[in-house]
Length: 188
Length: 188
DNA sequence: AATTCTATCGAACACTTTGTTCTGTAATTA
DNA sequence: TAATTACAGAACAAAGTGTTCGATAGAATT
Image 1 (cartoon, chains in turn orange, blue, cyan, purple):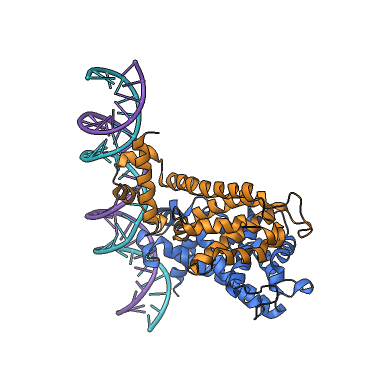
Image 2: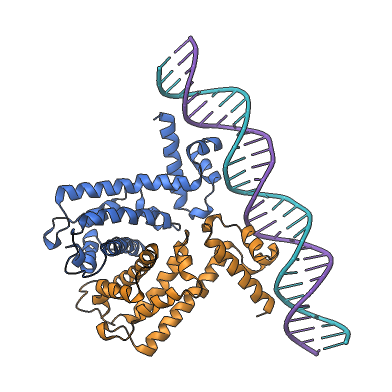
């Protein structure tokens, strides 16, 4: 990929995430973005068909990366396995979010976070899928597997949102304990 | 309130909900709304400062009503009380959603549902608050009460979304059973 | 080094949307 | 009946959209 393309792409992503922390998605215009990124109008449209595609590509980059990281952790440390797990993949994920490499939490907490949340949750579904025992356990008689997956990843997302709204006063370890308490029975 | 005002207001809400089922919130223009509602441009702005205020007022009406209904049910039938509850307030709420008085489910499932979801969840928080035992139970040692409330209402919302995405193949009774299984321990 | 691609710039463009302001008209209220 | 209030419809400036074009600079190829 051409250096110039990368540079433009980085500038747009940077400008866009900055703007997202300042005002809601709906009121961010292409004009705002190209002003902030300091690129030409035609250049923007050469890269992105529309504003929606921009946020789409941004999500792919951000969440693709964090889920890859979590998957790696699973392969290294094995599946979530109750109390004696060294560091659960969920705790690891929380730590990663807290370190805030790409300001992901900032994006989740911005006004128009629904797009990010959807990506986040879809990514988590993949992760949870790998964490769940193959067959339905005794804990979930007659309950569809995908309901459980949805419940677990949904609970994780809700927890993260709750965490952020409360100024992130808890440690990832605290949250991991909370999370084990409410959904643990379905993971083990 | 003037008849004419009510009529205009109804027409706008109707047009707006119709449009929401056809395309995402972001691409609905004031022009679309006034064309569909067949009102003058100045009339719209006499009622609503902006499009955001319109959706705000619509949410107030819709979710205010369903939560009032659920609260009534609680006062009549008592709190959620495990297996021997006649019809849990959550089951009752699901039935109400299914009957679809004001096409609430249609709004939740539309592309730009995040605004409705937020209202829905906030309303549920109030409801869950009344359902939860006053003190933390043995099931939730050292876990903040508002975490539990958030977890429960979040799980309910996620369940409803899962229900809709799967074409609502389950009955409210099924869902109520699923719901009891995953969050029941914290409600009883 | 010279040449060919290719990304960007910047300006211009027709078009849509926005929110405001105006006048005349019809419905409601006193 | 008279005064008030809500609406329709038109016009308006301002801002945003998405496209096109020729010029310029950087990258790649020979």
